Amino acid sequence: TSGPGATNLVTGIANAYMDSAPLVAITGQVARPVIGKDAFQETDITGITIPITKHNYLVTDVAELAKTVKEAFHIAQTGRPGPVLIDIPRDVQQEQTDFVYPDKLDLPGYRVVSRGHPAQIKKAAKLINEAEQPVIIAGRGIIISQAYDEFK
Image (cartoon, rainbow, N blue to C red; front, side):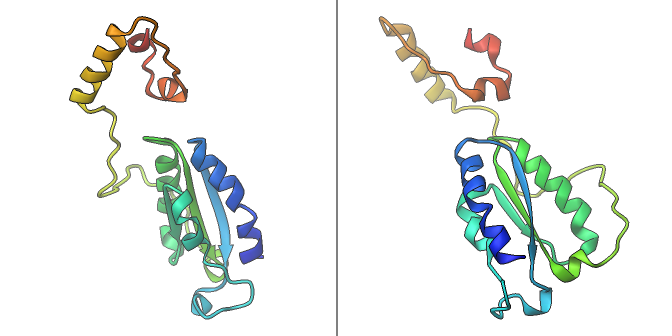
């Protein structure tokens, strides 16, 4: 099924988004000629998941599939981790292609911010240093950023 099966993923995708867990979900869609025409079991899963994914794709050209998969896994795992959805129409699923992973990614506009705002960091450090009994709850971000030494 395309629509009903895909909608069953929504809770898991939302959980991954809230928990910053990397996830790539691959869903099926009705054939390209009937997308947007209220076809049997058609669901706009990319539209439904926009608020709960880092990015989502509707693959309309089988030649773009390898590139899309590589991009999806990269986006899911970089920056703040989270879910990415790849929706593949039925007729695209039935096509053949040479699946060759690209060596490099070209993602214009996708920039991973790995530094905080210097003034805000200075302000936070001052507050922590001046606190009598500071409590810091450090989560998974310390692990992801490998900031163990800085945290100590």
